[in-house]
Picture 1 (cartoon, rainbow, N blue to C red):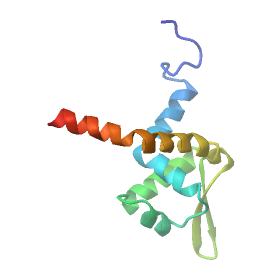
Picture 2: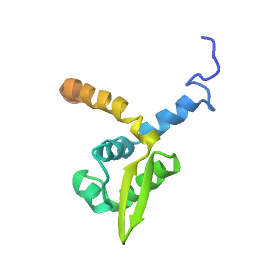
Picture 3: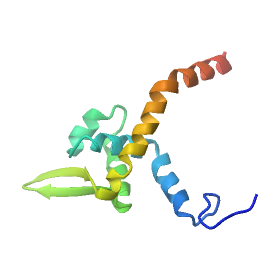
Picture 4: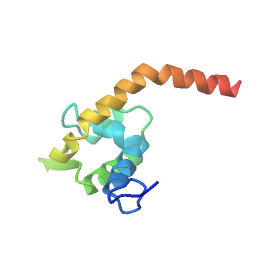
Length: 116
C-alpha cells in the first residue's frame, strides 16, 4: 500500500492529530455536552456521569489547547463554550452517537458472548 501525503498512517498527519483528540474517552463526551451550550465546571461534572473533577479539568485544558473549547471568566463565574472550531465536531460526534444508539447493544452482546 502506497502512502500519500496526509495519510493517517504518517506520524505527522493532521488527520492523526484529529483522531488522537477525539479518541480520548472524555473529550468526545465533554464536546458533546458543550454542544448544548455554555456550562460551568460543576454543571459538567453533574451532567457527565463517572468523570472526576480532576479529569474534567485536564480534559477541558487539553481541549482549550487544541482551540476547541473556550474558557470565559466573568464576575467570578467561569463558563466553558465550544469555539467555532469545536462546533465543527458537533455533527461528527452526533453521527458517532447515533451509531452507538443503533449498534451499542450488538457490541455489548458480542462482548458477553465472548466472555461466557
